[in-house]
Image 1 (cartoon, rainbow, N blue to C red):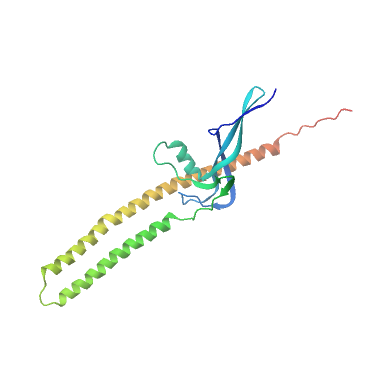
Image 2 (image 1 turned 30 degrees about the vertical axis):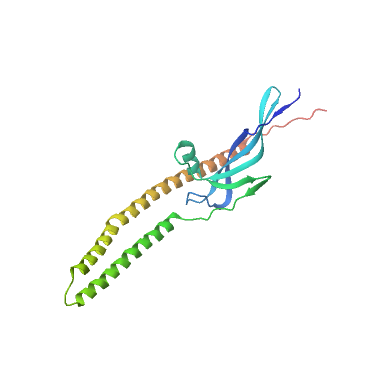
Length: 217
């Protein structure tokens, strides 16, 4: 029987792979670098009919994206919304599959610390400016209400920054820390699960009985 092949612009194929690297891979959308990640590949597909069955053959790769185990878990359990961040590793441009450079690694703890330091510097600058204004007022023989109102206005702004902005930063940091811990736990469980599975398969191969095949003359 002749094999029949069918193609169409809408035919595509998705494959999901677990990849292990010998180094920690930076991924977009997570600060938890790991040596294992999930790779999703979307390719063009051909439909083959042979031996009374359908066979799906992936042909040209269109795009490859990488995800941490936590991102993959989030993607397949969260519907609608704005989606889950992924790292594009390869994408087809014309006839070529172009490799995309790795994203820059950014640790969110360092980012939060830098933002917090900026806020502290702003508060300190306002405080120092107010102190200088108060010193200047104290040297005057008469104190105007306008000058006092300016000082009170700056002090109220500082109070607002301390009472509102700082707790908000702390809350955001704690929320992100909880999410990072949860993601790290998922990724650690995936790592351990993969190692146990590999060790189990290796043990099965080592202990598998050998079958001797006698040659007949």
